[in-house]
Image (tube, rainbow, N blue to C red; front, side, top):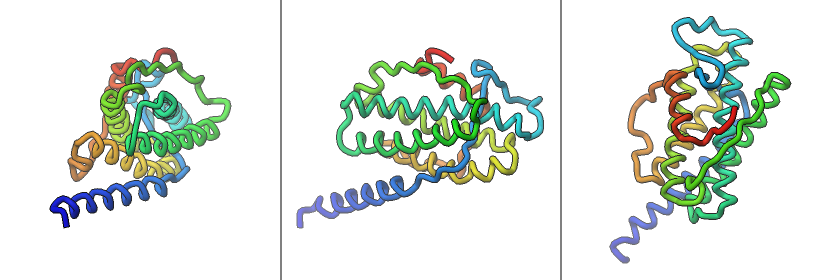
Amino acid sequence: MHPTAGTENADSARRSTRRALLRGGLVVGGAFAVGGGAFGWRAGAATPAPSAATDQQILNFALVLERLQAAFYTAAVDDDALRGELREFAEIVGGHEREHVAFLEKALGSNADSQPTFEFGSATREEKAFLDAAVLLENTGVAAYNGQAANLTKKSLAAAAEIVSVEGRHAAWISDLAGQHPAPRAADPGATADDVAATLQRTGFIKEQ
């Protein structure tokens, strides 16, 4: 046997297992997210106790994030610059994010905010730029979810628990593809609403809200 055959077989098995987990990982339930000053809601020390009204505010920011991710992956596939497992990632995760958008729009009904305009530039046309942006978006999403768990009602939090594990798999998969450790910590910290909003603004992807 060639000395690298065992490693190649192990890598192939690892990729197949990871793909199977992601394909089967979509759970269409609730979602939780954050808001920030630029998005009409600022969560801080004065955040009111969890309520239906607070859920609506948080879910509307979740909708911005999910729409951003869905549009990003859709554009990347349409631009046809990705190959191999990276393209597969965009196709599978894009499908997940579109399901999340559909759920949030249905949950919010007439209370859903209008969709922003997105522009991705080279991030959907060059593999390295795509990798960098996808790692940022997925890890920011997980941090956002963790940061707002305490601000949701029990009902929304229970639904959120079903979807955050899928978001974590997204982050681990793309981090691995980028050559980064897929699970660098024993526990993921949350991010504040302001920090998440600032991160999204720095991407330059959101042009209109």
